[in-house]
Structures are given as C-alpha cells and as structure tokens.
Amino acid sequence: MNGVELLDSKYSTSDLYFASFLKAACVPFIGAERDGRKVVFVFERTSAIKDLKREYFNRSAKICALSFVDEIRNLKSLTHISMREG
Image (cartoon, rainbow, N blue to C red; front, side, top):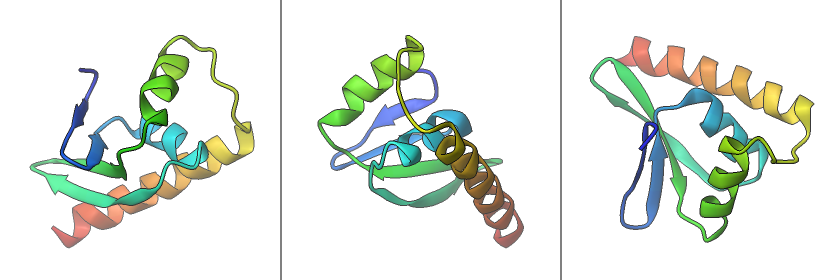
C-alpha cells in the first residue's frame, strides 16, 4: 500500500514525502517509530486522510510549497535522531 498502513486509531507511513505532505496538510502528528532500519511516521487517523492520499498521488493536492519543504526538513531531522537513538 505504498508504505502506508491503517492501524486502529493511527495512520502510519514510512514514506517521508507523503508524511511531510500530511504534516503540511495539518493532520495531527503523533510521532515517529523505528521499524528495523527504517522510521515509520505515525499520525492520528482522520476522515480527511483518504482524500488527502488520493489528492497526493493524483497530483491534485493544494498545499503551501514552503510548508511542505519545511516538513520534509523536519521529518528528515527526526529520522536521523530516531536512527541515532536506536
């Protein structure tokens, strides 16, 4: 499912760019978890995620480009911290 899976009340993805998009779209971010050699980003599951996912993968989403870039930087930093902390 493109690195995305649904959990009970959480939504997780290992896709850095999709996670950055979700953060820029103001989906509540819970945190990051390490899964072996990768980091999984966890969000609160909301009814908007289905539409956001469709818009993202159809390239029809409208979000602020600077917010998206900022979130990429933030999640990359979080990824590096998570990998160092083990």
